[in-house]
Every structure is written in C-alpha cells, then in structure tokens.
Length: 573
Ligand code: AMP
Image 1 (spheres, rainbow, N blue to C red):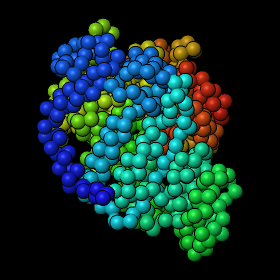
Image 2 (image 1 turned 120 degrees about the vertical axis):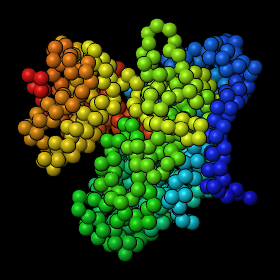
Image 3 (image 1 turned 180 degrees about the vertical axis):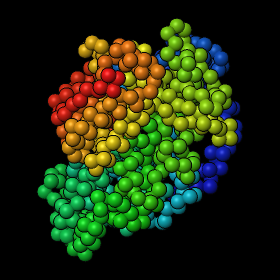
Image 4 (image 1 turned 45 degrees about the vertical axis):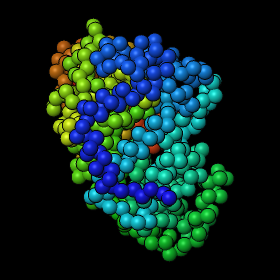
C-alpha cells in the first residue's frame, strides 16, 4: 500500500537529525567513504572506509570543478571501473555554470534523487503546517525538461531538474504531498519550452479552481510564465471557448495529451476573459485567476531577488514561499521557516545528506596554502563562509563557489543565508564588488525608472578590460523607452551606488573608467534564454548570468548587438 505522507513524522525526524547534528554529520562522512571506498579517486588518496575525519581532511585536497574534470570526462567516456563513486555512475547532470559561461557536467546518482525527496518533503512538512493543502489539490508547476545528450560512453546527460522529474520517486512524492502537477507529462517533457509553457498555462486555466500551489524551481521562470500569460491570454481564452488547441502547438504528443483535457467551455472562457480585462496592469493576476492558491513556491533568494517586485505584483496577497538551497552537485539547506519572507530566508543544513565544511571568507582567496575550513558546528553566527561539500555523488571537499552567512542554529545545525556566488565579477583594479553589490546598485538605480512609469525587466553586466582603464558595463532591458535624461540619471546613480571602497577610490583615481549603461531592445533577455536552452539549459533552472565574460562570446554578442541606447557616467566628473 502507498505510504501516506505525514508532516508531523517528517518534522519529528528533522528535529532528531538536527539535535544530534555533529554525530550524524560525522556518521554521514563515514557512510559516504564506506559506500565509495572502491572509487579510484579515494584510492589514489589512500582514503577508505576506515579513514577518520582528521586524516580525511589532511589527505583529501579542496577541489573545484576544474580539478574533477578529468575524472568526470573518464566517466562520460564510459570508464568500466568505479571512478568517483563505488557504484558506477550512469547519468550526468548539466549544471548552469552561468558564471563562467561554460556548462559543467556533474555526476547524478540515485542518492541525489533520494536526497532531493528528503529536502522537498522536509520543507513541505513545515509549509504544510502553516498553509495546509486541501485534498485533491493540484499544482501549476512550471516544469520543463532539457534536451538529453548521450556522452561518448553512452551515459545520458540532462539538467539536474530533468533527471529529478524523470524519476518515479518525484512523481510519487508530489502525489503523496497532494500537489500533483495539473499538466500532463507530455507537456513537462515536451521538446519545445515555448509550447510547453503555453500548455502549462492552459492546463492551469482548465483546473483553475483546483490549483493550490504555483511553483517552479526558480522565481525567474514563474515571472517569465506570467509575462507570457500577458501576451497570450486571449489566445488561451479562445482555446477554452472552442476546445481546439492553438495551432502554435505542433508537437503531436502534446496535442494528443491536451486533447484529453481540453473541452469546449465557453463559460470558463468568458469568466477568465472578464477577469483578465478587469485587471489593472495585471496586478493580482494570480489570486484573480487561481482563487484557491495557498502560496507561490520557488527559489527566490540570491540572484532571484530582483524578480520579487514583479512576482509580488502578480501575487498581491498570496504568500511567497522561498525554496530550498542546493545545486546540481547536491543539496545543502532546507527552508523550514515558511513565515519568513524571501528576503530573510535562511536554510538549515541537513546533516545526513552530505558532509559540509566552511571556508571563512577571509581565507577564501588565500593564494598560498589550502585555506583552512571549519566544521559544521564550529561556524560563527554573523560570519561569512564558502561552502565545501562532500557527498554520496562523488564530490569530496568540493568548493561550491557560493558564499553564505551564518544566521543562527536550528537545534545544533547551522542556519545560513545565501549571499552570492564567489568571484562572479572580475576585478579591474582593487575593486571587490560581488554579484550582490551589483544587484543592490541596480536595485537603487532602477527605482528611478518609476519616474517614467517604466520597470526593469532584467539586467546583466560585463567588465570591459579591453578599454584603458577598464570599466563596468551594465545592460538593462526596460519595459518601455526611457528618455535620454533618465538613462543618464540611472547611469550616474549606478556608478555611485557601488559603494565598495576599492571601487570608489579607483573611480576617483581614474584607475577604473566611467561606468557605462547600455539599454537593450525588448526581448534581448528572451534571446539569451533561448540561446541557453539551445545549449542544453532548461527554463525552470535558468539563471540570467549577472556578469558575462569574454569566454561567453555568444551571449556577449547577443547583448552588444541589441543595444539601443547607451550612456557613460559623469558621476565622478
Ligand atoms: P546549478 O548550477 O544550475 O545547479 O545551480 C546551482 C546554483 O544556484 C547554486 O550554486 C547557487 O549559486 C544557486 N542557488 C541554488 N539554490 C539557491 C537558493 N536557494 N538561493 C540562492 N541561490 C541558489
């Protein structure tokens, strides 16, 4: 018989794990080493199931993805022996690699599916206490599948989310927590995300009264979906009225699956049409059209924060629930505080899914020896660290490249806030701006757009090191056409809003040139997304790269060839 999901049981389990975090954490490392002791990587380092923690740390070096590439390549080429894990790896994930503009292959194992379910169920249990989902509820999940590649050695590679959605465990878990997707699998796994998105929206309308949760992996994709809704709502109403799917849907499997649920329903079409026509600037779109939505769920922290303004505009009073924290390499933290708004969301570390270490931020860039790490229960509240991961999927002391700030402890496991990805913005002189500084500066300057009733659709940057001296270039896509005056004002505001002392002094000494603001034509970020999907990314896992380097030539080309207006800052004279 199917096991019923029991929130209180899951919470009890989490309480027990976090009360005994230190011991469980060390046990987890032992178990990881035991399961993987046959792996070539560990054998080369003279590490096996009997290795104690101290010896593990002294023998295993801290590594980045680059260090693991030869091993991952060997796996992709079909190595017959265990390379990184005890059991052979049969699937790879393609992680976003947005910072470097280069996609990364990482191992995917069944253990990651298991961890994903534990993370989903834990955060769901806490959410469900506050916002219980009614029986027979449905979710409007904007889920997509990426292209699948086959490596030279015959392994399947797709994005991590695609690997998760394809697993039977995922479907089972969503069913058990009463939020099965309203869209058929053919829509989720369709080959063209534009068509899938249209059908997700149509399914959402068909089941609009049953929809309890609206979600996607990242907030960007939820906002993107409703921006699309603004464009296609009349066509959707027409499909509802006639029961005939728009001719824009050409994939036969999607057409067949949709035919089973789309029936002529003129009353519903009229109702939706009336509601949409009555909305002012689409404010409150979500509660108007999906009146039983309990909350909107997806990762809303970090590089997703800039989409919150628009998401709140659509959501009105529907609560936003920020998702958990992880990466294609593995999960790290769970959001167990559903009452906290995304801006203050902290994550609690699950001590039984990996072994975590932390590099104090002052040591992160240490050029000399290996930076020292501190253990899970030794971190200090208020301090910043880079996360280091050891898990069942073949990562041993792996530097994730993300910076986090410890905000407290949940029982004895640390809670942290995501700050930013490390080294996203290259240094020109002695400036030390991060992705977060860029976000704050853009947030401040974008407020000026409201003077002309405009909004910022999305943004990115490029550090121009070719010109002398080098300077920051910020790209903006705006909802309309800003006046020259306004662009000037925003550009100067951006320049002075970077408050890092190194930047300010370099600007004053002219060792960093004036910041440049380039306004892009409408649809440029859509072109970037399309390009990324073409390269194997997927809409629900997509993160707009916040700094595009020269290594990412194709994207830089898209940006540079779509500039409609630009201005050079005069803020520093
Ligand atoms: P990917 O490379 O596609 O697997 O994305 C993983 C990266 O997404 C992480 O290393 C983080 O930089 C970011 N990320 C994942 N979860 C969160 C979160 N909850 N908040 C902020 N950023 C996140």
